[in-house]
Length: 213
Image (cartoon, rainbow, N blue to C red; front, side, top):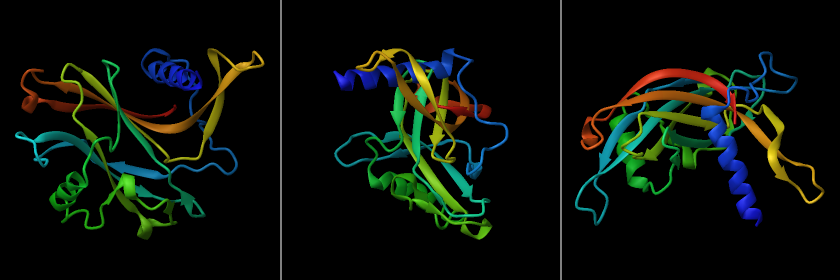
């Protein structure tokens, strides 16, 4: 029962990203003790990888973030990254992604990003200063071919959080269940190309914003 409740909370909060403009927004002025990493990002790219035992290569999408800690202290880095389509498919980063996929991405970008890290294995501390900037790769398996828009969500780039009351779920005392949201980077892309010809799929950048999710 608890598992169903948690899944229900997650589904409603996730759907609200598409349909609820009144969701909580990050603070314009950070509160005491709040921090947000400086983020640069490459636009998503695709890569085809021949996995053992498969007759055809598997398509993956990935993006590279450069994270710089401009605060006055080292910060914790516990990322959560998801790809969400307008068909409501949700793909967690790294799901069903063998290590060979990252190795091929790292080889592809060795010249520009010689110290590229895989987000799933990245160190959980980011030190201060430009000299300690980190290049991080995030990888997703291919998404629904019928999707016309996708959103990429990257949480863990800030320690700002907010607690909101679930609109319907109640706890054992009858009070609304608290849902904790994190300041999250949201990147939106349009998807063009024929769904029947996946090799023709192209992503077009639409927007970037911070949301509470």
